[in-house]
Amino acid sequence: MTSTTTLPQHGAAYRPMTAEERKVIVASSAGTVFEWYDFYLAGSLAANINANFFSGVDETAGFIFTLLSFAAGFAVRPFGALVFGRLGDLIGRKYTFLVTMMLMGISTFIVGLLPSYAQIGILAPVAFIACRLVQGLALGGEYGGAATYVAEHAPQDRRGFYTSWIQTTATVGLFLSLMVILGLRLNMSPEEFASWGWRIPFLVSILLLIVSLWIRLQLAESPAFQKMKDEGSGSKAPLGEAFGTWANAKYALIALFGATAGQAVVWYSGQFYALFFLTQTLKVDGTTANLLIALSLMIGTPFFVFFGWLSDKIGRKPIIMAGCLVAALTFFPLFQLIAKTANPALTEAHEKVKVLVTADPQTCGNVFDPVNVRVFTEKCDIVRKALAKSSISYSMTAGVAGSGTKVEINGKPITIDKDFDKTAAAAATEAGYPKAGDPRILKAPSFSAVFASAEALKVVGFLTILVLYVTMVYGPIAALLVELFPTRIRYTGMSLPYHIGNGWFGGFLPPTVFAIVAATGDIYSGLWYPVIVAASTFVIGMLFLPETYKRDIFKD
Image 1 (tube, one colour):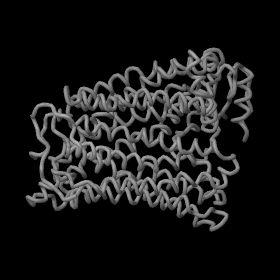
Image 2 (cartoon, one colour; image 1 turned 120 degrees about the horizontal axis):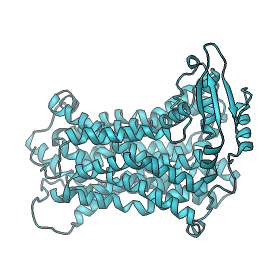
Image 3 (cartoon, rainbow, N blue to C red; image 1 turned 90 degrees about the vertical axis):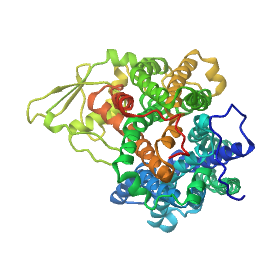
């Protein structure tokens, strides 16, 4: 298809979406779904990956590889935003997100072919980490390209609606990866899946890559970029212009602290931390938890598009700010309701079983461990981390200087040794705490079982409210970010705050929440992290974030 500089019409009466616009949305969304599918596979198949690529590494090498795996997943994404954002503003949106798609697809396919540690030794984890780093960089460049491309094809009065389809892709990509894995598990033995079946989802990605590339190759360059290129008004140094001058850099800071930071913690709390809370804190079995989350996502996902559409009518800012505010105000009661419904025995134990930790405050450090590789030697830290992992609520009192750490459950001392986590869990169970598999914990092993259980449906309702908050903050965010920056630096300008917000503020949410829980002895106290960030974003956004929905992005 030849390029065109025909711009979307603005201010005209409502018209149906054209065939070309539908193709733009479908092609951009399909490619982004594919990239999220690839990215989620490593997390969904972590146990199989560890067994094949990391089984023989020593402790030091394991520490390094774990750090690099984490970096690939979250920390490296802003660097991908810088690299590919710059390319997108220099050479075009279309060709840049074709490059990111190729990198993601090929690196994912290679993971499916990599020999195991038993076959090639240390080269196995090195090669896997290299593929993950490429994936992280590619994902950092994909989102900004897709959102910018769709926005620059959209009529001004429907930009929120058009870009909201991009916002559904992370959820759809997660669904797709889980469905492929589930289908394989149901059609082969556990031994077959562990041996070679886990590689199939990675290998299948090459087919998705071919289809996605074919669709995207049918597209022309975005009209806004083509117009800028024809006029010779493009930026020669997008990075310097976007972040080296205060006029543009201030919008990147406002976008980060006044929009994407709060959006990220609301998103991660409503989808990823909710699943963690169900399985790790409330001890709900994985199948039940996944079914509950899946139903809430199925109900809530259309609201990404609804709030994108609504933002074209009333503005992006009021919807995003309202989502941050209502999340900050209701996270505590919602998660408490989920706990009381899914595991009432645990909430009862928190009230009746008294666990007391006595320790010299000087021996108690922080227990922040974002990649789960720190080795804790002080008994105070070992005790608090073990109690938090077992969802045991405790209170703490300061011991005299130089005194040791003591733990009592209902007045009975608990020995602190190398097996303290097991000892404490057994003592807590004896005192009234439920353990995994307890019949008092919600269990619904199928969709029909969920619909037959009033408690399960209540939890789905609470989870759906959390997902609705996600759709409020995430549905309009792409349009807002696009509209904050001029065409010449748009790809670069919007990508960095988005990926710092989601990769760092969101990506660090689970370990930060756990560290707060471990330090305080309260399973809900970790929610202060998303509450404070969301509330701060509300305040900063209300004061400094401009409303953008009426901006003509073709006149900058």
